[in-house]
Image 1: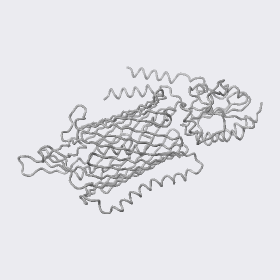
Image 2: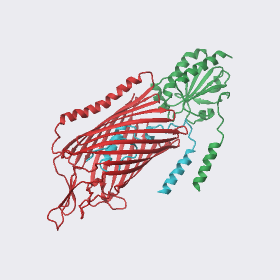
Image 3: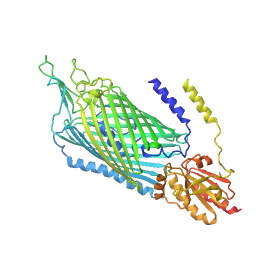
Image 4: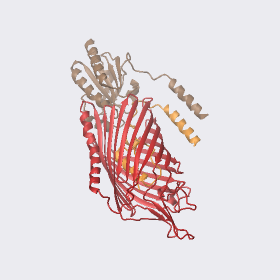
Amino acid sequence: MRRVAAALATAVVACACSPVAPYQRGYLARPDMAMEPVDAGTAKALERTYSAKEAARGGASIGGGGCGCN
Amino acid sequence: MAATEEPPGGEPQRSAALGALTQAALALPILLASAKAGAAHVGEIGLAVLGYRERGLIKVTEPVLWGKLQLDDVWEFEASGALDMVSGASPELLTNLSGKPVQSVTGASVNDRRTTTGLRAKRRFGDFSLSVSRTVSNEHDYHSHAYSVQGELDLDQRLTTIALGVGRSDDRVGSSIDPALDEPRDTREYLAGVTQVLSPVSVVESTITLSRGQGYYNDPYKSTLTFYPDLVLPLFVTDTRPDHRNELAWLTRYRRRFPERNGTLQVDYRYFRDDWGIRAHTLELAWQQDFGERWSVRPALRYYMQAAADFYSPVVPRPQPAVLSSDQRLAAFGGLSPSLRVILRLEDGFTFEGSAGYVHDAASLRLGGGGSEAFSTLRAVYGIVSISRPF
Amino acid sequence: MRSALVLAICLAASLSPPASAVGPGSQLPGITAPRLADPAHRVDFAALHGDVVYVDFWASWCVPCRQSMPQLDQLYRRYQARGFRVVGVNKDVATADALRFLTRVDVSFPLVADGDDSVAKAFDVQAMPSGYLVDRNGVVRYVHRGFSADTAVELRTEIESLLGSGA
């Protein structure tokens, strides 16, 4: 666990130096490069599908409320 | 959800659901009206419909309406409304009458409706932005009000973003088979995350969410029935869980564009643990391939595995414990879910998306073994169709 | 040990001097770029001598550009007859993205593509959008990073002063 965290921290620090100019954001602005699927409806539907059958929940956001999924 | 017939007052419920969706839909024109003050506005509105079917058991249909509006790069609003319609039978009783613990479904089929509406407003102050959100969820045996406040700070010309948030959810749990049940469940949530641009073609985000809740966690519809050869009467225990739950979820997401291949790699990994003894890993790998300007195809594979809760048991042990649940969502199992999404983007901005997925959860799919014996294999399919357009 | 080395490299990198910064007083870089809609033909920045030029770096993914582009178009139309020119340098990775943006925000001034970043590097662009106001002698006089309601007002004053100075 600690080694993973250390590696992650090193990667973040190292990559923070990788030169990405302010005008080189074209690829990053693509919808498939976003963290959430751009379609909010699909994202919510998928979240509901899996979380209703699993004990693990959340991770991406908070304040979503509970579910009486039975 | 275990009603033997549609709960009385179905009509008002239906109009309540419709009201919720309408409310979300109306929020947008109101925002548009305020945008007419000459501000440059960019927005998007969409509708998605989910259809989910479990082998012989449950059928779910869920339309979701959503909208986003950006004003001047200063304000951002988001509204959504979802109507969750579940029908079918939900497993309620785990009994070992046949010798082995087996799930049985009692009661006739069920019709349940849940409406969820959410609103979010975000304001930018230079490199810092603040967002507040409110989500309300209602079904006849469950009500939830949740709020959250989140701040984000952009560093290094938006190459690094740090997010911190707090949230709170006040829920009330009821039961359609026990009208006297009306218990609260309150949860506080905390979020900390960092997003880092690694190169012009790659970005990574890692977020930790902590949740501390107390209140009513029992499932009012589930129970366990265990026969012992030396006992005349079987042991019967209704689902009893701890009155608190502390959870931690650590989600890391990576996106990498391969311009030469016209494709994007998407990797999501989540580690989850709580003080009920559950440990879960979720890994999703996806590749989105572009075909020309309009079409994209995204095959994906999701693997999930969890360890059972400390108080999970398909049979009532002796001596009988204070907390016990045979709900297989707390069991040890693994799950594989392949899916395929097809996206069509038109020149005028209209985007159509179709996704189809298969969910296969089984005790045997747990990496490293140890799946719960009594876990009843889940096989389900789902399809999502959505349409969205910018304005 | 490795972490310490990486940290040291990062510190060194952050302390190194920036590439030749193009700011007030610098000469307009002598460079050419292909036209956005017609890549076979190129725009020569050196040929712009004699006019007051605003070189604007924009992209479809740049949110303030949704405001800056129409405002620049207005300025262009207003002062074109007096010798004011605007050249929009597009930073989209795919021309199709730029063209899609232009269907909603149409402009009348010439646009060029900069897929290989050569123009952006020559101007050492530090923010998006960025605008460089150049006088009739090819000397950069004002640089605007980002775009707000104030930028348009400031620009008008600056353009007027450069146009009025003649020569």
